[in-house]
Length: 564
Image (cartoon, rainbow, N blue to C red):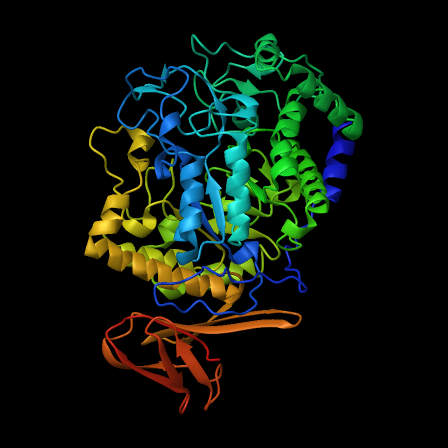
């Protein structure tokens, strides 16, 4: 039966991710870069070249002080191991303020907001609550510390009104830890041993990731009953009949057995069906049966198309549902497949348009041309029609590119100019501190967003302006992330990017490590003599003469586009 289900799922997968020519992405009316140069022009949205902003829901912005403490979560925790007040309303407020628009962000990924375990537990790194969102208790409800379903609905609507897509972070692989308040799920749902060894396919997928993190039997097709504590909870909340009726309709429509993964797939895809969520970032992909992801994608796609039909006026474009996977340790240089040692799995064949790329944080130490050439080549050969999400900092990678924040301008240049999808981790653009005294392990990466520094420190504001100019240019030009790269000159370093898809063409030139004062950029063979160009970084219009463009300013970067 599984083979039939997977075949059906894969049949539903579309990897083209092309833009809708009749409904191009408009520039938001309130959009404004630091230079005030956001232009009224039709720019297609491409996941392959998108800029995703990733944030911890609890650590970004506090929009509702009334939900800072809920469910009696008042026990003392380790440093940065408890809830700090960030919530869904806080994200929505920043969308309204135009914070993401100014950065050129066109997709937001936030950590899971489903209801977390109520209790706290010692992970060996200090007592902790589920502030990070990866310890699910009830996939059908939102955690009161994060907000309500109405709050989430408003977030999606507000994001869409600013032409920003929404990625929900989803976990199918495991439940939350067992605590006094949170009993273990039934034996037929989860395994609690053995611990993963991560040396073979079997001991990576059929195991518990860490101690006291019960692992869902994602490989099982055996029908199971709903846990009594979950039924009792739904009854107490007055929604038992509704939940059971919806499950009955789901299983009748799909023909799936009532196995653990299919319950969770139903619960997660409800957010797509009800709210119009544009995509999923999928957690711990390599630790679950890969067929699960094809099934998740098939049902999420069905839900997305259903939502579109019900809300035709709210549809942004014709892109299919998007899924990016966290296959921990996957590197773009390895091509498509992930190697378990005794087995290789190509997750792109199981519902994923993109995988998170763990290569860039190492590549970032190399020169620009080496990085850009490598990524352009791989994305146009081995990974053609697929994608990667590049990052330099994240919530659980304890060896980021620039942990001390000593090279922030280069970090911006590498992240936002490397071919592929870019993932900004909250505070990359503002030098948020990643070395918090007393914080153990990944907690040090998860401090609260440094809004006061953004508002008061000139050096941070200068860095922010750089990210905003570069991010806005990237957003306005799909060629940066999704186009083909070519070096035009070695010194000063100048390169071009070109994106062509039927009747849409985008051409840009970028100069890096330019001298201050008088300078030139070699553009011969790309832009002809007499072509008028606009440097969006210095806000200067220039004309190509003898294959060159001349500038005079103190900037070491130039971002050239065709002048209107």
